[in-house]
Image 1: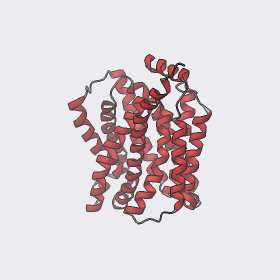
Image 2: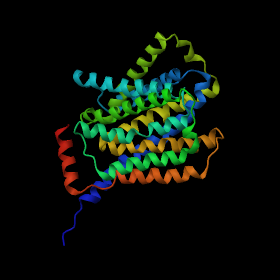
Image 3: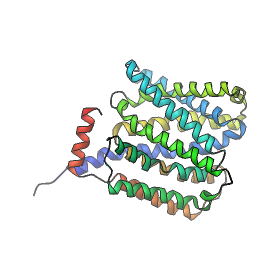
Image 4: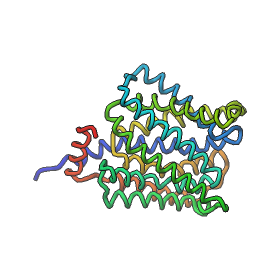
Length: 316
């Protein structure tokens, strides 16, 4: 009886990118905690600027030694635009949303990103929706809701503004997840993120200058600067590169589901660093999130895997 080795190979090819995406999401959760440490001493946009500037400097130094940074002018325009979308617009919308809603409620809205990524990828013909993928995305969102509990329902009369802004951030992030694949098939993830981060930092600086907020760049104390150092390195350069590395090697929907790990990691680290309360709901929610990730990354049939291979070969 002939044995089919396609599924095990698919598992092996999916595991490392998925592990990188989960690691990036966990670092993103830690970055939320670090941001909450730094923001009271400065400004959300100032924190975003330093994070992207520092991470960009680190990635540029590494990329200059390891990969070819030159890209065609046509590709450079697209890479820059996507960089502003993700590291500029997304960061701004995320910070603006948290002015109206709690981080827990914001995290719940942001957890819609996997479903949005699937919908966008399917709409433009990049991926095919499946029952397992949709079920996995919904279970992941449910896990986040269980973990956050009543904190997700907190909100005042202007909470709708925060929900709207965070949902817009989720759309921006989903567009980036799907559209960046074109460039990641032509250029190394290290080169792409090294180009995007400084451009995003420059766009944030421009917004600060126009809004008269440049003075907020220097308002941090020792604890805030320490948090910024983490945001530039582990919560910035390493986090962004791991996410891009995963997008370079597997489908956007399989990577996007990892974002549901983000609020769980933030809740656990918040309890350790900021002495925030944590309950058994977080553990139950984590089970739901892991189940959602497993379903979205469930091995596809050989025919589906073959189609994905042809898709990558065409560079679409």
